[in-house]
Image 1 (cartoon, each protein chain N blue to C red):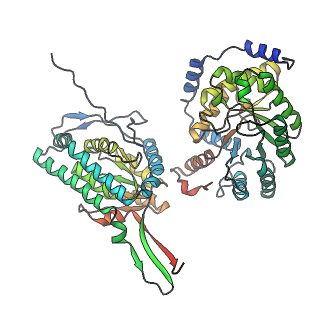
Image 2 (image 1 turned 90 degrees about the vertical axis):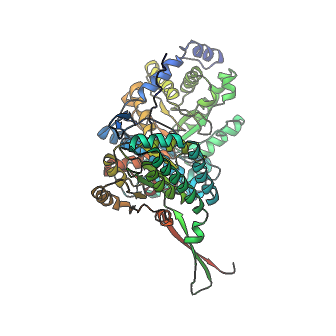
Image 3 (image 1 turned 60 degrees about the vertical axis):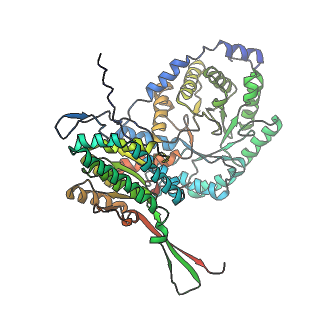
Length: 280
Length: 311
């Protein structure tokens, strides 16, 4: 007797939980061979709102954790991903239509990216901070601090690496993230949310939504609680519209090249300068 | 006269009350919580909820500065928007009553009441003499409302006459000078039947308001408990013609929670109770969420906590 398929319900990741979209909507995702693969949730603006609330409340705990601890947790994500590589490879092959060899290279690179950024966590303030010379009896030093809540529009392809290289630097610096997965290639992001949920990451630091970025982009742009946006997955036109509505709260909006770089971390940080009298 | 005040008559009255259908109360409250309130109704509900807030600070760390800051927030909840209504009252400990009253009067908030938590709040574990002094002290300082706690120990042991007598004495002290709110501390009463009985006991003894909780015990103002109290108030009105107010306090933090409470009021006690003189919400964090939702309705995009005051 043949066994009945146990199909997976693809859900959102908000505040450490896996809810369906409050709107109840789903949409169809097709593979490289045009065959139906999954019905992920189609997130609404209210799911975005809930994700931002979760991120905002998680932010201070994450930003105030020691940089060493943040690095450990990022490394832990890499460890857990390693054990899940089969699933990632299957999903990448199905969606992107690449060979399993190419998919394997992609996931290895993604895992190495986590490790690379985890190493940066406790070095950042030494490398990008400074002890400034001032003409007075003061110690004057500058160190980076996390912005707050950062939204990320993940790029389409490579579907896993594209998520990791945008997400890792944002949270390495102590920000809380709301990541909007690529509309057509969301499976890696969903599986990554299951990895993150089991990696000692405090609930709400990473929130992952699936759906249409065109629907969510204007709400992200206008949301006063979102302090920065990585627009990797948006078109130039969408980016321009987002920048216009985002000007109200001086959002930092960035689009990076595909290279891993500490600038990706510090772009979503502010430099704080402290004056302290010498001898007290 | 429904009861003559003797222990026997009270016990008989309370024993004759119909028991609460617990499953029914839970599901009715859950069903009413699914009502969707949008656009103009939502704007109305937010302003109504703001005017019903008893802005509360009941911490050991309270200082005159903090109470004054709270007073200015009560008068002008959103300093950038003069169309926001004032809150219903300020709720503080006794020693802060005078400071609050003076500050409110200075800032143009004469109509905002000052509520004092008296009678050995929050436990109520003190002798009657001390409770009377505590109340008198608050009244002398200028409190317009007294939030008293009942003796839950006595109530749960069945000494209802004692509880009744205590409320009556405090009510006499308040006289015309102040409204009396009676805190049932429903989180310690265990069953909905007890909530119904305690509600009636307080109303019979002369309470102007019945209030769910001190805010120091969880669970506090859950929807089914508020439903049971609103039903008691409605039935008491039918029985006697007296309108008693209800004040849920504790655990109401979001606009959604507050609007759910308003739906409960409208559907249970009726629209007449949608009025700050008959319904109040004891809260501190709630006000900021109401203001942020108000900003969202006005500007069309989601607001940030960075643009409302920190308390």
